[in-house]
Amino acid sequence: MRNTLVLNASYEPLSTVSLQRAVVLVLQDKAVVEHAHPLRRVRAASVDLPLPRVVRLRRYVRVPFRQRAPWSRRGVLVRDGFRCAYCGRRATTVDHVLPRSRGGGDTWLNTVAACAADNHRKADRTPEQAGMVLLATPFEPTPEASLMLALGADQDDLPDWLPLPA
Image 1 (cartoon, helix red, strand yellow):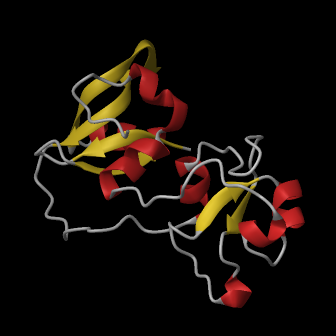
Image 2 (image 1 turned 135 degrees about the vertical axis):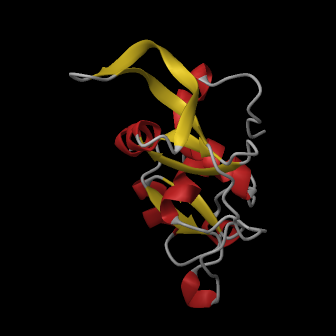
């Protein structure tokens, strides 16, 4: 599970990594803990450090400018909060608003999270043809917002100075 946010030396969000990777970065002195879990710690024979939630790299890493967040099935489910876009129940699949067989692609604006029943009921039709209404309009998250969304429900214990997605 990727639940630790990695910031560049300039406090720009770079990625999310596993807890183990974050601890290794801190122990190798490549990163510092900017925000830690208030109650949990990582302990070993010669190590005692707070459980990192946000780490910042000590050296600046040049990253090519990302204009768009990469599309993924998991990203669509996370963006929609694992809620079906048609009924609001728990979503486990991704549905194409304009089916792929009719020219629809794997894009942020053409995919929504859906429960298996609604995905099967809609089948190879548009929502209008199937008599279904989208509860929310699909949108394309910014690269930074997609990183913050990837942290999921753990956002409650993040510092106030981090930008949270709307």
